Image 1: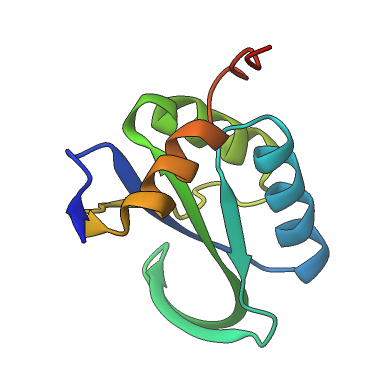
Image 2: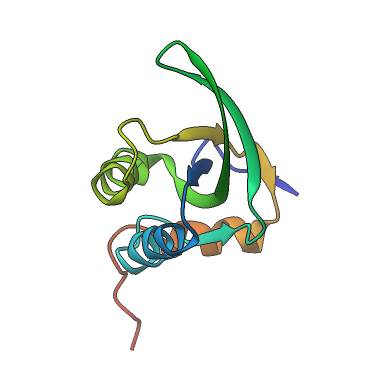
Length: 117
């Protein structure tokens, strides 16, 4: 295990529709804003306060892996693609992980690096 130096982030978001969750996941990985997105295919039950009422809704959970450098752009893209007025976007720090995984994460987001000849 190695510490991530505060660079790695796990972002949680939920969507009301599986198709929307897949669309967001493909877009953010395709734009290199996240290295990987796990989509929980079984809906989660969300109980939350909204406009003075307690709501109960089935949603699909996205778990996105990114870096601190890409966090703001990832948030903009999720907001742009999301159907909710206030989409969930919660970022948690990655404090430790395997050296190889954290290296892959850092290489997979942001601008593509030039390949060595």
